[in-house]
Length: 330
Image (cartoon, rainbow, N blue to C red; front, side):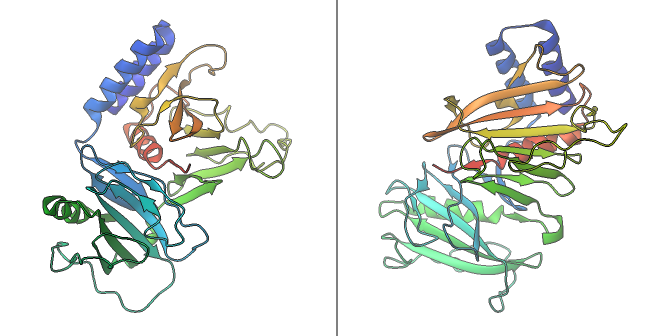
């Protein structure tokens, strides 16, 4: 499954096939390997995303605790600039949204997570039920794996009851990792991506303030020490650049802000959505796949570099999960 994904992409690089055909074949192989449920994941928190549901980047503004972990809805959803953290999103009046937040510092005693988020556990009340939101809403607070959460169900005024029930069932799929096992998150200028436990990450700037053209890099090996606007450091005698020294067990994911354009970003993003490339810029023995993707009115360049054609299946799965964690705010 996953090895076939890498092998197919490698064959495409060597065979110099049509880019569109390569992309379709890569996507077909990846779809065959992927589980039936799409998962939205952030900082070790995930839910299964039903078909035709949507997600968007968390937009906490100046709020640092709690932090929003998941934002999903039964229709397209986007931040609206509200001063209220949970109600800071717009979606259709016949849709339902689910917002999951996590407190970093103890806020009292939270009951343990219930076996199911039934109507008794997560009741929905008529408006005004949530600050800054004009529709029915409900909330439940709980602890899971030693972490403290709040789940907010926001229903549009025309949302049908079966859809509200389905949202509770989506929350039932919630999976939480212990904080020590959870990913960190690399974030700058409204763009963020998970850094899996044990991986390394850095930000590179094209100008000193780090406002435009920021480069995000996440790798399963130790990246060179330079970050921000700092120039590359000279390596000690005999030491090879770790990116040039990548092998089949290594992967490097790069996201660059301010792409000129691109296609609409799928949710969630996976390796199957990228197209393998070939030519002089691909290091010998490597496999590289890229794509320019637009999240609403903002576009980024995404690139995945495997150090060899025989990447372990577990590594390929990790890269898929990492790509699915990419969030880009308008």
